[in-house]
Length: 102
Image (cartoon, rainbow, N blue to C red; front, side, top):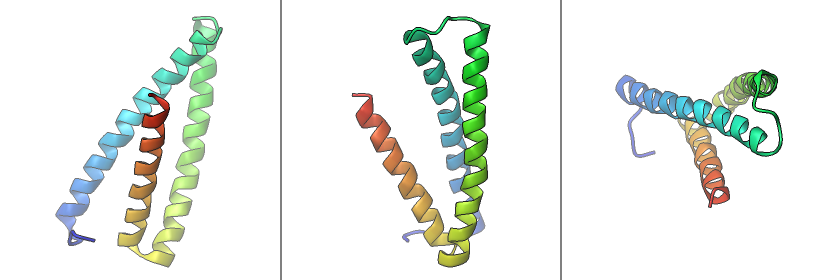
């Protein structure tokens, strides 16, 4: 890894990670809501409630699975390697989403 692991680099990395998550949270919920309406769901409180419930459930599932996987990675591969793995997966998913939007 090209960077030395110190408090400053970890804080900067976590800030960027947090900003990325915030961007994803807003955009995915908005896209799910818009897509459901475009596919025939009524633009009303029932649809908003359905999408909100589904989206929150999937988010909570990810909040459970994510720390479990990262804990396993940290125990078996160390901090630097596990961060590299998580970042690689984020990049892979981002590229896949970008390719689907074309």
